[in-house]
Length: 114
Ligand code: 5GP
Image (cartoon, rainbow, N blue to C red; front, side, top):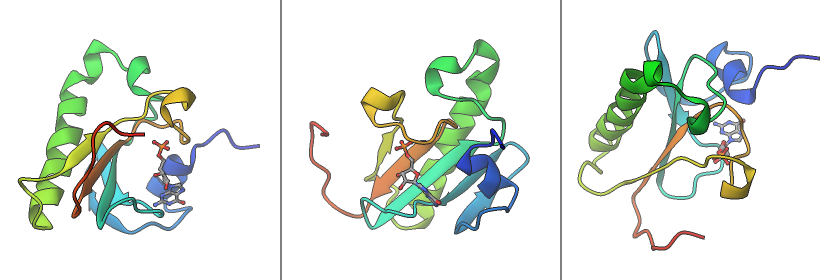
């Protein structure tokens, strides 16, 4: 059985996704179950399981993921109002164990989150 995560399968085009951006180290695609009018997932291509598994070597990459998502939100007209979420671990709501940043925009978002 494959140990590949769903997002590795999306990266390899084994699973279809609505991809908005891709480069050698990152990919961004629409969430299949959007929680806001704009809901994009930004992932590194290297399969870092979760933020708490990242290392100092990943610092530039993590920064790039944030800037990619911010740029996509801006392109979609939400440059000033969006939320970035990382669910780290199952108790925090993580269901896909391949690090990803959620970018949400297009509606009023409440705080605190559930
Ligand atoms: P997590 O709960 O791990 O923070 O986020 C996983 C996200 O992946 C969820 O928001 C979920 O809707 C999304 N997702 C699950 N399956 C698929 C899929 O097959 N395609 C896409 N594009 N998103 C998915």
